[in-house]
Image (cartoon, rainbow, N blue to C red; front, side, top):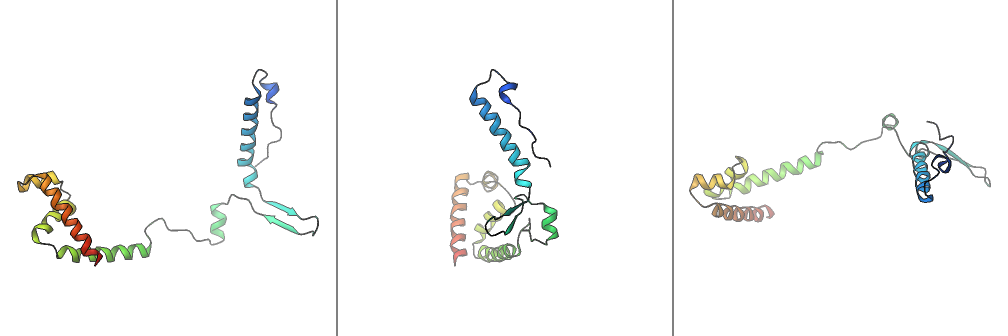
Length: 149
């Protein structure tokens, strides 16, 4: 990775361009130089007073080097603790569902386990959709209270 050898002379290259545009072009060149060179280079700093040498690693690290040093990475999937909590919550939810009345269980099963819409359930039961919605809200509130116990 080579450092920029020479910056272009934008005044000569674009003679009719304003000073502000030249400044922007020069600034963007410096940003490119920073991203392509400065971040990726390791440096040594020597203290002239004490004579100590300090090694400054590059600020960009490679995946391969991290693997060589046996660095640990967070797993992309669900963690063990999250899976355990989820399992406990599911078990508790099933226990709470059993405490509901038969009609409430049927409504929850149709809406959440069978994936039916409120409109479908209302047509099947010949009950207004708004009534189904209100019952669902009441049942969910009841489940929430049972889960908190």
